Image (cartoon, rainbow, N blue to C red; front, top):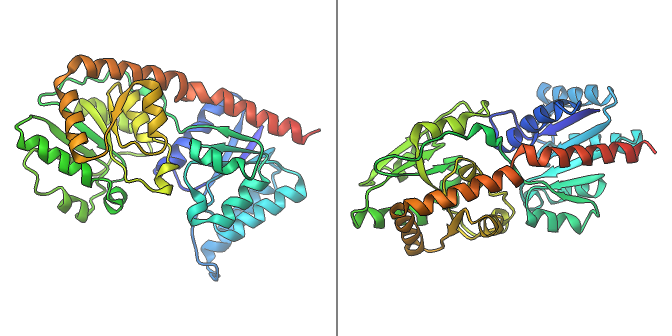
Length: 351
């Protein structure tokens, strides 16, 4: 089977890396070949060479008559979206729409168009699944997953224990997600509880460094990593020996649709998770027993304090998280489901 995949970004963009680039590496073992093109933005009135280059590349690949088109998100410009949707309709090429964010909030018409015309929709979370089912009868819940085999062997014995956060820091700073965590860490420090905090993904952002610049506890910001390397986060975990992973979130419609990928990475690394009870983090931790929820700074401080003092509890939650990831949130678990869906789409179209 030959697939044309259209995605948001290259392998440095987390959602594209996880849901397209790495996914199709695993699917290659199932004899599915993919050509991947990533999005480039430009104004609707643009007549630049870049615009024509993007459109020309898409048309060139469509002329090769792929068996299936795989559309990740809705971040290609409107002209590309309409071109692909109309081409698929005229040439009777089925397409899959893969969504791991609340795309309908910022691109409502494109998102509805893509969902309605898809032969199957892959929803990254329950909130996305519920939205998509209003527009399309065939929706599969396909979470964002990890290659769990990369995370084994990491030690969690650091003195003092390491609390880790991983992600694109500048965006979370702008969203206010760090506020409750910073307050809780300050309370911990004031009570004389020893710990280190490591933030991975600072991106050399001046505002973020200033935000965390006046803390009295041990703090480290890792700005860069080789994000194209699928082993990047696992290598960082092996270097810093984390004891607890944290995922503070503000509650909003967009955040409720997120895939809780941060928590899944922590679980794969065998460490317990403390997360805000928002969106996908709720069923993930409740069903797995891999962590706890916290809302206020006092709840966050209490959860951190409890886990920092309870090595056996951390070990128990960490093992529960590893098991849950292996069984439900790994490529090993979801690739057969994606393969079956792609086969179904292709076979149905050939009737």
